[in-house]
Image 1 (tube, rainbow, N blue to C red):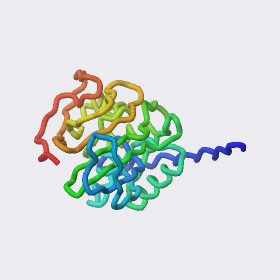
Image 2: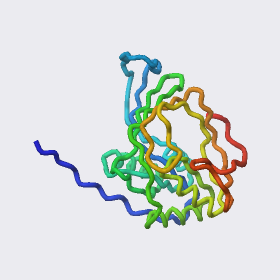
Image 3: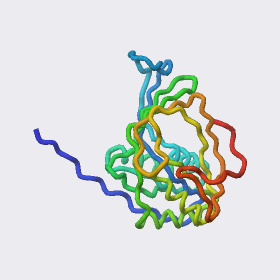
Image 4: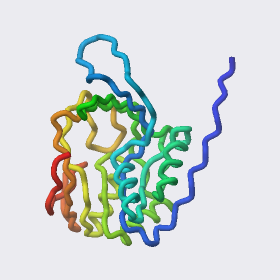
Length: 237
């Protein structure tokens, strides 16, 4: 039997950055959400799901969608593949009025998570696919640069593909809004350049806040850290 591989889908042309109020940089993913009576214990056993469905995920996609619903003009810089999952993500973002600057995924696959959920708000996230570094060059990067200069607010996730936007904000002297989280992980998340291994994280016991990072020109930071934090952080979520 001969395997047939579908032709890669072309990526959308970069949008016009004019009028951007908020630039958001970071992940957009196509996730499988599975609802359980309770999160599984760390022992071998079988559980039955109460329900399951697919949905757009990724912290940056979530922020962009909610800002758009509040009436803001949002531009999301993210990484998408040339697969069916990317088409689903594009469709949801477009329907909600989020403009997207797409960077092509290095392996052609869109980020994807498996999320296990219970009724008490507990969650275990299994990263099935996550892109590594993408080049900050070309027409899409020019649009990102113009959007950063025009936007009243800049929001950056500290995932590897979004770090060039953080570097650009440092060079421009812009304040950046980031999530400050502590997570329990199985498998180390890379804070340097390169791809991240598949990992699990639990929301139980995490303190996630949104705060401003002041990135003055010439400031120093550890790779993946948000410079010196200023401003008042929002309550933990």
